[in-house]
Length: 217
Image 1 (cartoon, helix red, strand yellow):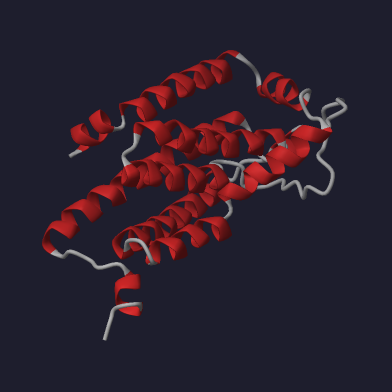
Image 2 (cartoon, helix red, strand yellow):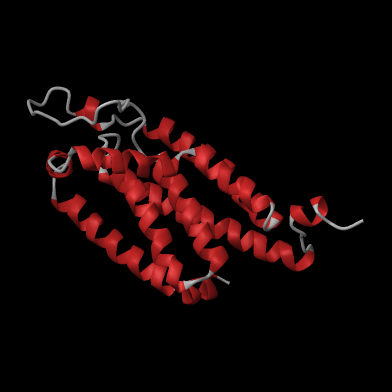
């Protein structure tokens, strides 16, 4: 099944691996200060609004709205998304507590540099690794790419996931390494629960909720 997933979504995986490799090499060859200073230099009024909006795509509330929408389309997909969200959230929380790393604002508190902070953005200082927003975003959009299996839209889904991840660095909430880890976790759980759903559906087909709500008497 994994081979089929890779073959049918080759555009998504190829683009992700290329970008992941590039960012990974960049994080290895540059210090944390250089990484954050590079991104922070791009902070501007237009970018502030865009990336705050992009960051909201990694919020549980947005994820839950998609879950509710799928109740009327395909109940099994809705349940799959819900279970994957709960599981990934628990794992991310455990990892955050286990690693207990400082976020950029606390990490650079003794560094004399004029950082640009986005207005009205509550910048956290603890539990940086991994990025929960990025995990949630990659979980959601990878799941949608797997569900729809459409090459035309796969890059659109990936774009939204990437923008969410980048927004966390732009907003000074995370380091690039947190984003990389979050993306891997999100994709892992998306594939895991997609495979679980596929195997379960063979034995127990599920009817969309709308069929029960609007069925004729």
